[in-house]
Length: 137
Image (cartoon, rainbow, N blue to C red; front, side, top):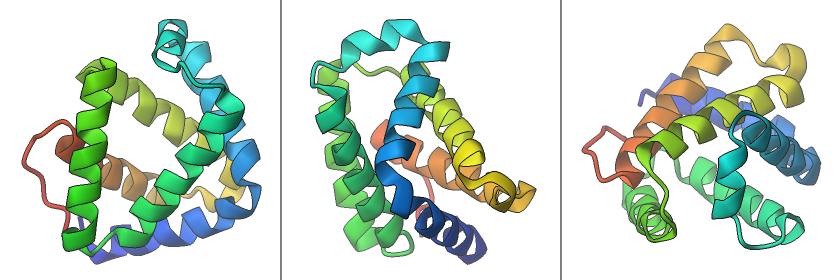
């Protein structure tokens, strides 16, 4: 990922952070509306899962550009997700829901450049979590 992608993702995430709980609710609404079968993967109450999701995003976004911090975190997260039964198709659905949530939550701040940055960064994150070699520098 390029430094301009990292900057766009970090700046846009900072705009969404103040409404993190609402963003998490919106994310799960988007995810399950498109992929109702994925609901069974989430055994924890979403009122608990949502804040955990936002903390994970906070950590990952803050660590972009620092692969020594980011890679071990994503690899461990990827292993946990594999243990839960998450497949590559689930990651695709997750990415779609994430982009929809960002577009809805950021409004006009979700420019084509910001959307592209998130697609690139999520693609790299997805690759690491799935155990595929990617460039996360």
